[in-house]
Structure formats: C-alpha cells, structure tokens
Image 1 (cartoon, rainbow, N blue to C red):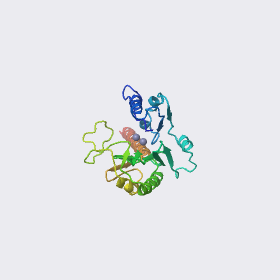
Image 2: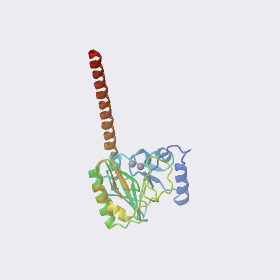
Image 3: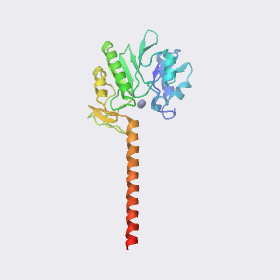
Length: 245
Ligand SMILES: [Zn+2]
Ligand SMILES: [Zn+2]
C-alpha cells in the first residue's frame, strides 16, 4: 500500500514508480499495490501517473465521491474504514477541514499515524474551520484508544528553532517530521484558537488561504478606489484653479 504519490509527475526528476517497484520486488513480490491519498491536493497525487503505469496496481481517486464509494461509507465524515493488508490492518479516518475529502491513516503494526496536511510541523492550512475542529476532536479521541508512536504529516515547514519556512525549497536546520501522540491530543485546542483567517498557536501557523486571498483582493480594490478618488480630486481642483486664473 502506498499513501500519497507526491509532488513530482516526471519520472526523470523523481523515479517514484521505479523506486516503489524495486521495494515491492524485494519485500512483497507478486502482491498487488493499492494507492490511496491523504487528500486530493496536487502535491500529494502528481505521481499517480507514474504509479498507474506499473502492473497489478489500483489507484483510488482522491475525490470525495470515489473515496466514499471505495470504503462503502454512508455517513461522511462520521465513519471509519479498515484496509486489511493480510494480517496487518490500516485504519482510515475521514478528517475534512484542510481539504473536503482529507483522510488520516493509522498502521496498527507500527502504530504510526499518517496525518497528511491536517497535522504537520509548520503551516496548518484550514479551508473549513468547523469541519477541521470536528476532525481534530475525532482524531484526538481515536488517539485515546490507540497508542501512537509518531504522527507523520505531509510536509516539514519549520527549523529546529521553530521558525516557519515560507515558499522556499532550501530548509537549513530543518526539524524532523515526526510529531507525538501529545500533539494529536492537543490539536483540538490549537484549532479552537484559530481566528478564521491567520493566527499562530505555538509553532503552528494557521491560515485560511481563501480568506487571506479575499482580504488581499479587498485591500487592492480599496487602494485602487482611493487612488482613483485622489486623482479625481486633483483634476477637479486643477480645473477650478484654471477657471479662476
Ligand atoms: Zn494539502
Ligand atoms: Zn500538501
């Protein structure tokens, strides 16, 4: 099973399919490969095309309709799924908020939680605060009954001193990816603290990108209107002075 196919389409830049094929040949020869995603943002599924070219592979599309159909869920998001890899169960939890069809995966064998972009060391981009808070509460309650060795998110955006990397590929002194069971337990209080647009809670920078963009657009429009008003005023004064002079 593969969770997320990553951000790179071109096998020349990132030979994902060849690498996965090599691991399968060494560790699980002849077994089929199942590909699921934490969510449908392109940086988590750009590599799907490479993987689809392998034989004996099923890629489950990341949209809500395909996911609910695949797991047979009638009630979204208050459902849970299990993937049986053959004596090894992976639990699947619907966790909308960052993305409307976000999923978190829990491997019972390693007790690792794959938390996608819902919980990661860096920015928590929240598209739907109410849904994200409800998801965080369900996840925290799951964590109370399931031991979590580490939570592994989809990105690292912090250095060891807690400074956020924004829009850069060079991450000097990057902190490790893993978060802890306590971070899972504390997530609801962090999200409850979110002001709905842009706020910081501990090391997390919480952002609603749609609202921030709307705010930028509104500020740009206001600036244009003020410039227009200023030019009109200047023009009228100039005409008045000319007619007097
Ligand atoms: Zn995302
Ligand atoms: Zn992402």
